[in-house]
Image (cartoon, rainbow, N blue to C red; front, side):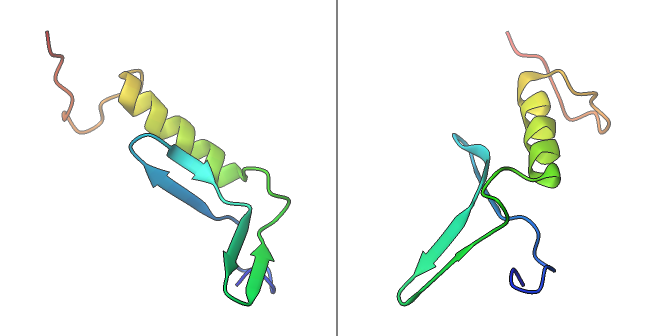
Length: 69
């Protein structure tokens, strides 16, 4: 968990948000901050990898990509 250091990064992902770091989680009666609030190393790498796939600049390791138009 976040308190003992086993949880080191939190992020959300979606179509428009791509991958977005989460710095603070709030719920009724509780709130906790994850790390410094800055994107962590894993978050940054995953975000870039997903953007590269979306833009077609990543190597197609599985033969899934097909150029349209």
